[in-house]
Each structure stands twice: as structure tokens, then as C-alpha cells.
Image (tube, rainbow, N blue to C red; front, side, top):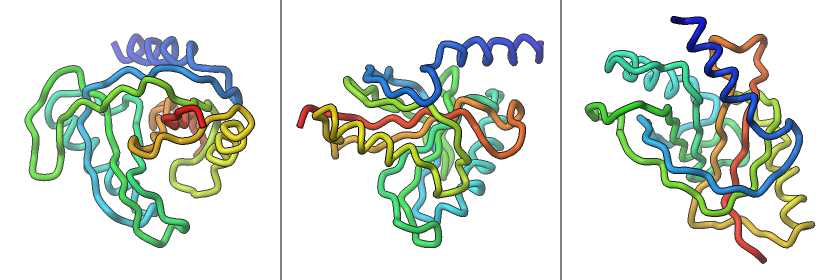
Length: 174
């Protein structure tokens, strides 16, 4: 059973965009359990641990793709950012005082960049690569929808600290 789940995850991500390549695509909505808080980026792991425990307590698998929604991001890790961490769930489960179950909205057009990075460090170059690409291709970020990072490698499939991730920036023509 566990091997089948892991193989399914590997197959799901084999279809992910080629690493280092930027593409424009539609992002489908997804039902998630999430926790949102304003805190320093260095404390992101606390939100993730809380969310994973809650999802497991409701009988859902917690080692699915992790999404970080950046409602606002501070310039340095010590300053507070408005962060939401989300894990897809297979069905509506009860809310808690801190965990919200909701549909993460779809995005009609997004610049997507698959790359490797450490979610707990601020040295990821994805945003720089996406900004340069958008400028060259005549796009700009759609300010009304937050940027997302989807970590395609789960904790249990990870070796070292680097994860396969997809940065998703909602865009419009400039």
C-alpha cells in the first residue's frame, strides 16, 4: 500500500514541467486544508507541522504536495510575512479553530517555473528567473492573486533539504 502511494506520487510528478523551464498554463482549483498566519519565514515549519498533524488526525494523508501561498512576503526572513500553508485533501473535513478547509482558487493564466530549492531558506532564485522572463515576454504579475509555491517532493521522499518545487505566478499581458 505504501509503495503504491509512493509510486503514484512519483508518476504524478514525472509529468511536471522540465526542471528550469518556464511555461504558461492554467492552474486548476484544489480542495485544501490550510493555516494562515503572519510570522517570520523561519517559523514556516511550525505552521507545516501543525497542519500535517491536523490533516492526519482527520484520516487524510499528510505527505501530499505542500503549497505555500505568499499573501505578502517580507524582504528578510526575520520580518513577518503573511503566509498560508496548504495540503490537498480528498474530501471536506471539519474545520478547526486554526485550520480552514477551502477551495484554493484556480488561475486562468500563470507563469510556472519548476526548480529545486529549500522552502525554509530565502535564497531561492525562482522569483528572479520569473521576473526576468515576464519582462522579456511582455507579462506582469496579476497583483490580485497571491504567488504560490508548490513543493512536489514530500518530506518522506526528500533526500537532503532540496525539493522539487513549482513557483506559480498569476500573470496578465503588460
